[in-house]
Amino acid sequence: METLAIDTNGSFTSKDLDSGMDVKWCPGCGDYSILKQVQTVFPELGVPKEKFVFISGIGCSSRFTYYMDTYGMHSIHGRAAAIASGVKASNPDLSVWIVSGDGDAFSIGGNHFIHLMRKNFDVNYLVFNNQIYSLTKGQYSPTSERGKITKTSPYGSVEEPFNPSELALGAKASFVSRTLDRDPKHMQGILKRAHRHKGTSFVEVYQNCPVFNDGAFFAFSDKETKKEEAIFLEQGKPLIFGNNDDKGIRLDGLTPVIVQSQNGYSTNDLWIHDEKDKTKANLISRFFDTTFNDTHFPRPFGVIYADERPIYEESMQHQAEEVISLKGKVPLNKILSGDKTWNIL
Image 1: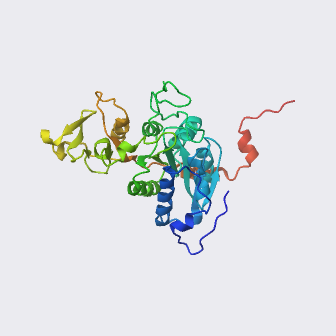
Image 2: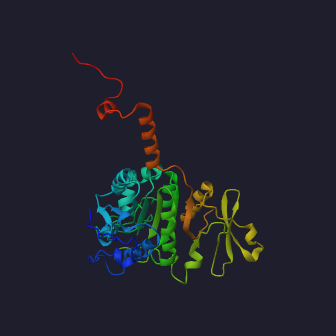
Image 3: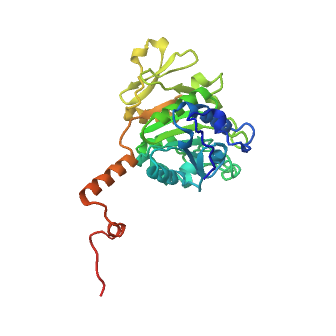
């Protein structure tokens, strides 16, 4: 665990979250922006500094814990979710944040990722997705696009990539969102929403790796392409995009269709975003693919799905209290042995 300078006044600034360690990411890495936005937002969350905990796995992203002057642990490859679950279960008052990359989260840590989504601890899971293994110098990852040429796929990857938001929804996540390193204001808003959500908040951050996968997501942030290639979701607002906000998405049954305003369609005809509608959230998550009549859809950013349900640590505590009220405090040995025992003569 890291040494923490506790703020006895109960308030702190972004500078108080700087550990003072030299930040060792490559120049131009998107991780710098993510670190900056986290340090900017956290003083506004109303949580005492000593209540924040960062748990990371292995990878470029996982160095994050060194640079935050909070409690934290740089843990083992793919196991950050398991360790964070233990931290939250034993200290439910802590604000627990998991930092991982696309390889750490979805490859060696894939099993832990899906079960964290299912169990719904009240933690926040930030995945820095650069669609490449950067720390180990440029191999394809579980999110690399099919055909990606890397050091381990010199003739192009033949694998289908994970769509992280679709994966999270399939694993019963209660909060699914996407933002990107080159849009600081948007990222700050998503971090605040993730914090407010009671349950596991999954935040996918598109993060540029300037060395091994430069520009992978620039189409979603460059001025010339952003309005055509990205669509920003707002609760209760129609799905509109395009250079002149002249394109929208409507539903033909359960099939999304892109329409043009000049063809007689108004905002009343368009799909209105509802974060609690899981059926529509699943459709939105698939804008990642060109699966709807081979149509190219803009990539969605924002809160794709958010609906609260019971959280693990509270359910566990309630169960323990109910058992104690019925049976009293049972010795651990009796709990472990159960009711069926045998005497061996």
